[in-house]
Image 1 (spheres, helix red, strand yellow):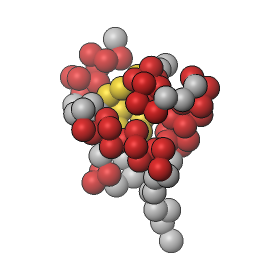
Image 2 (cartoon, one colour):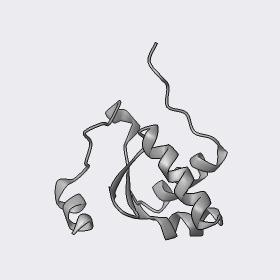
Image 3 (cartoon, one colour):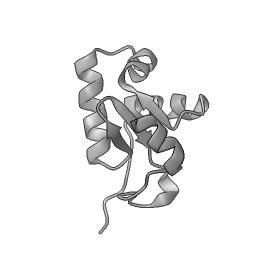
Image 4 (cartoon, rainbow, N blue to C red):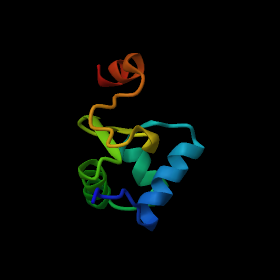
Length: 88
């Protein structure tokens, strides 16, 4: 049986707010502002979301939300031009 992707209340709040703001790429400080949590708590949350393939780490401190219609999303980078711009 394939693992299902589910979100807890805090993860769901973060993803929902980012979608509402039309942000598919975000930084740690933006997640902190949305959730009002400490830096370490946010880093732990984002690490867990990366492990569960909900988001991708583009570079240190910068993340991309994987659209759930992409399935596993292991190789998803979104718009390559935008992702490249954000990495540089």
